[in-house]
Structures are given as structure tokens and as C-alpha cells.
Image (cartoon, rainbow, N blue to C red; front, top):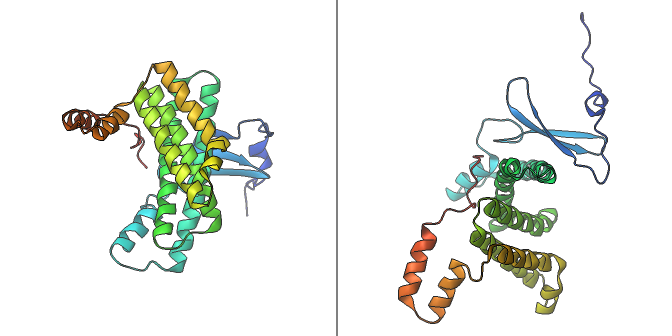
Length: 261
């Protein structure tokens, strides 16, 4: 064949990007067609993914959406489709890691407003991974490696929500997100046979407890609206409870990411 052969050596791409244990291992770039890409540095190479939509760049619906529709309609999607869904989980999880690295890099240079789009994207992908795990659990298709990923996803979802809500000056919602994450992780530990004492001593749970306390102190949050609602119901003050419930229903929140999948 004529012409100069294309060089397929990845080293040319990796030159100047030497990864160490303490370095950021993700970067953002724009493709020749104008699409946004993220790269995740891994041992012996890298992963390149589209920043939005499906990580593989396909414009088709995600496998999760297709599988959910089929299963809701009472159809059996088959072993091959479950395997493809497992690969999609891995792809979205890798991109979640890359996006969180990019958000962390922006935070490190003090550009919190620049970090938020990456946080929103990471939240989107975290929710996608959790939805796949939930679907697998409902249909008894869970894998051991997927189940072990669940606590990590819940923790990261909690941290992302708390960070986004704080950046948007919604400290009460940040505290509520942390309390939700704490309860979800406690429930996982109870299901695994852990005692209440073990839950109290768990480093991850204690980290979230301290994070909630820091946000409460910083923003002078004593009781969130949701906590006040719980208090009102417990004392059977239903008029106050109705008013608080209406206020809560009018609130925006970060649970629905602004970046569309």
C-alpha cells in the first residue's frame, strides 16, 4: 500500500502523561469531529470515552433503557443481553471515575464553578450504574463483583450530591443527601450481618457523619425542612407538617442531573 503507514504505538499518545500513584489520571479533550472526550489513564494504556451519551459514542439508547423496557413488558432479554449490560456497567463506571478525577482537578486549583459540570456528569453516571445494579438485583442477576461495587457507588453518589448542593448554596439539601446515604449504607451493613456497634465504628459512616456536621456548622443548619417535617408528624402537628411538605415539594434538588445522558 502507498503512503505513510499510520503509527499505532500508544506510547506517542502517552508521552508526557506519566502516571504515578498520586497524580490525576484523567484528562479532557475535543475530538476532530467536535465531540467531547475523556481519557482515563490505566496501567499499560488508557481508556477513551465520550463525555456524554453512551461512553462508546453510540447514538442508540443505552442497554439499560432497552433492557428495562423489555423486562417491564414481560420479555426475557437472554444471557447475551445481560452480558452486554454488564459491560455497559463497566464502561459507565470507568467514565464515572474519570469524571470525578476531572472534578477533583478543578477543585484543586480553586475553580469550584468549573468543577460543577464534571460533578453533574459523574452523578449522572453513578445513577446509571446504580440503576443497572438495581435491575440485576430485581431479576436475580447480580454478580459478586457488582454487589461489592454497590457501597462505593452509594458513597460517591452521596458525596457528589452533597458537593453539588453545597456549590448551589442549598446546604439543607446537602445534609439531607448525606443522611440518605448514611441510612442506605447502614442498611447494607445490617443486611451483611453487621451489628449497630460495627455501624457506629465504621470509618466510611463516620466520615459522612463528620461531613454532615461540618456543613451544618458552616451554614448554620440546625434542623433541615425534612427533619422538621418528621418532628411535626411525630408530635401530630399535621397543619405544620402540611406546610413543610408543600415547601419541600417546591424545592429544586440535584438528584436529577442537569447534564442529560
